[in-house]
Length: 345
Image (cartoon, rainbow, N blue to C red; front, side, top):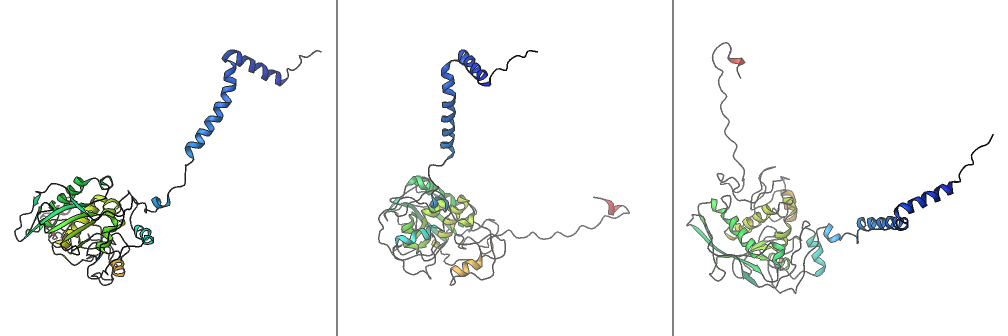
């Protein structure tokens, strides 16, 4: 009994290779493995980061460029500092800066130090409010050396100031007030200035170890300081709501400029915070009590909700307790007469 001899496996492989080469060409036999290796290394390169993430960006400490520090002195009162309690500041030492910046949320770059000169921005003429008792004329200015790309541009900053001061939930809800945007050389009652981190710290005081804005008269005239670092980054307490925080900054510091010197505490647990509460630092009375023991805050652990407006409900004129009044309870309806009245809906 005879049997067919078995074909060696290497002969089958060689035969298949020859058939493939005859059909598709020898170049494909060499190209396929080379392309497979190249594809592998391309994928490795795509998914492998070039460098480790910048820890400053992760921790919210990334900032923009720094310039020479001008010599300015004396703090003001504001969302993060008080004129009554603030010691005369000195130019911060370089090693202080990362500690202070750690209070900021992560976000875009800002200028650490401008040149302490200011230029007018926006178009004067905005006139809001019907009051005659307290007419306040203000200019809007920006410090030299700031990069407009960081804060949205000069015109955008001026427009935000005008719109905030003209909002019906703002200070002009009080019928005594009228605000007029005037030119910087027209003897304004207060100057609203966007300043660099360093200039704000020098004018407002950095003793609280947090980026602050403020109202100050240390320049010899009423000046409302808006810290560009806060304008760009906001505050942890507002949980990323940069628009509302910017409105709060303007209303709070301008409130100091028009005569509201004192801060206000949270009135009750879960209520809207008064606009004159230092919401940049905390929404909790006890935390503010520990940070600024000479201030108005009781150690009662009340925590409020963030609020950018003096009068969030225009019908409620209570600055200390800016919440909607509870509606009066309606009297219970008397049941209708008749044997089937109880079953009616």
